[in-house]
Image 1 (cartoon, rainbow, N blue to C red):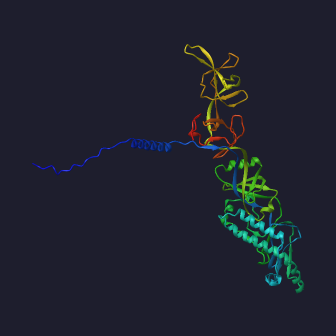
Image 2 (cartoon, rainbow, N blue to C red):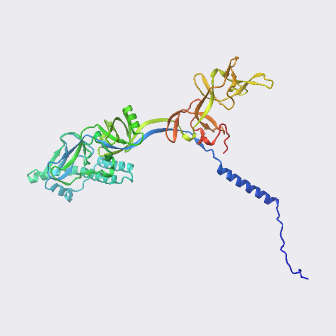
Image 3 (cartoon, one colour):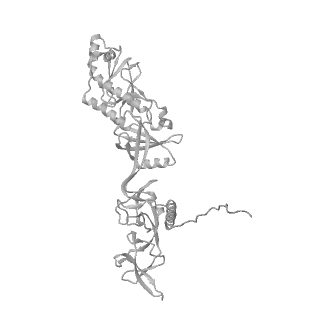
Length: 468
């Protein structure tokens, strides 16, 4: 017989379930369910209504067209400028000198000239130019740095040249001959010291290639440079009237061009200094089908006389009111009833209607039903459709006249959550873009500033309670 005395059987400990484990398991399951429900539920997000504006603006890079005359030199030698770039000169004013021998140029670079101090007004001009550049600098347009460098160098040299102008007469007197030629402006205008080939450009000459700045070359006419007879020496803008031409692109280009033509004058903001002005509209379509719009101004030309490409913003619309996101806007149906059938009653004295109802025996009774007014016309009210039904009869107060509810209409509005539930408020849209709308403020049945509304109207139902 086999001996089983040495056989060991493992003892299985029974599962001890106590009240603590059951509570922990219940809480764990509850937390998991809550987390799953949280991520699967659309959350209601509030939005605080603020005053604001929407501007139907379009930003364009325009080409400045001016009445410009390139003046060439009749002499060869070293040019020295004495009219500051961007200032107006009268006919007969000194603009530049030409030093045929270079003696004046040598004199400028020698220690005999001493220190050239600038006046407070001269320093202020340089500071203004530097501040203007830093405020509008865009790192994607690094070529502007070189334009700024040439502009500052030219300005500084022209300012310092005023201090040595008297030495030019001394050099002429010492030589006994006129080695330094003085050249005055033949007519009045704004002086600039650069040329770019766009001087004779007209609206009817426009093509898309002119707007490609990669192909644009601007030649700066520098002080103390050696020039030949016939070389460009400066440019004169002789008319205060000037234009900015923009090119319209996109599917709505023709529509926008017609809209601008109908306006005749459009308000324009210059992004360089944030100034605004009104421009007269003209349009042109070239053989390739490109649409160009010219905006003509009668002022501010001197401010932009050195700029060929100017960033502008067309201020087409500017409506102010309450600014709300388009996602908050919803359309809702209402019953429309004559005003004489709406009265006040009940314990609260709120508005409502006298609804004809029937008891179990089919006897007609009149019951006051409180209902909210959401909008009105001269003769009718828009009433909530949650407490009334189509084909209900309502009774005119102090009368037996009845009205069968059948007429409906829709209103545009948002859900106000100031009271903790989704309360529809009608809005009147003044202007709308892709993201926001501007609506009238302080209307009888509408919104007020700082009201809280549902950001996404699709996440809530009418009269639904809002839980934080």
